[in-house]
Image 1 (cartoon, rainbow, N blue to C red):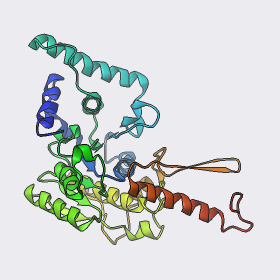
Image 2: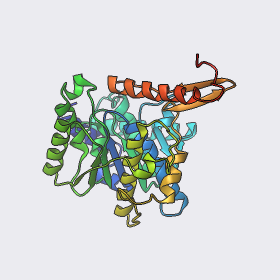
Image 3: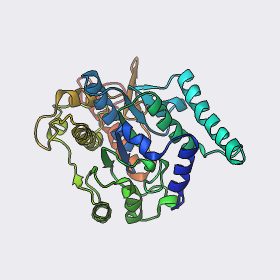
Image 4: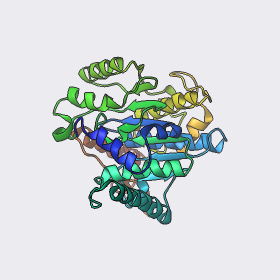
Amino acid sequence: MNERAIPEMVEWTRRIGYVPSDFNQLNVIHVAGTKGKGSTCAFASSILSEYRRAGLLRRTALYTSPHLRAVRERIQIDGRPLAEAEFARYFFEVWDAIEASAAREGRDPRDKPVYFRFLTLMAFHACVREGVDSAVFEVGIGGEYDSTNIIEKPTAVGITSLGIDHVGVLGDSIEQIAWNKAGIIKSGAKAFTVEQPASAMEMLSTRASERRAELHIVRVHPEIRNGTAKLGLSADFQMGNASLAAVLVGAHMEALGHPIDVTPEGPLPEEVKRGLLSVDWPGRCQVITQGSIEWNIDGAHTMESLEAAGKWFAGRRRRRCVGSPPSRGCE
């Protein structure tokens, strides 16, 4: 992942018949970060689905990673993963286009994009073919050199909580990581982030200024904090992700000419509330009850995420043990 990454991705894009500006029609919300970017994308996608049902949007999409059970989960149209037949069709359309370009240009037909690049090409291709007019794209790793960063004109950009991860690729300091994540900020698109360590925030602000973009700090919305707006992912640490998602969708809808009232203190629109509650994100703060057993399912890949997941689980257990009589397992 270096300065050659984006030109190489643009070249793969050309070989399947596109230029990056072709993807402007998708109206992409682009999200990077260390912790919570997948959940933020899920919240945003769920809210967009509500505005699609209200008739303000035609078709919505979500591109995210990693997948939990099947790779098809990474590319979702109108809130559902691609069906097997659809996934196979778009896979081979991209595969065959690359091989056809190799034959025309005298290249080795065995030369293919690496896994994540190929799936990203598939996601763009599927979204165009499906007539998507509102999409949420999650960065894979970093931002500056990530395969998704061929997006030229996002409608809004979000950067979730930052921490130390992927040091072999992004650097071993919070400043280097912030520099990489902020690479998705584009001129003309509002950029939003949650509260960050001071040095990370300074880097994000510097990068936003260099790109001539507005950077806004998003704090937990009062209706999310007090429970008026309920979350389908109910952990306390999801409040910041949900608040960021709501603001991103607000900026997105404004960019599309459908302004909605998402303000730091005012009441959230009903569509936003429904989207926050109805989000479906298996494996993230998921609760499954089987008889007397309650399964609490989450994952973490940094020390900060492990701590957050532990607090969520401890809070779930604490609530079960304050009843009268206490639930089983509270000895």
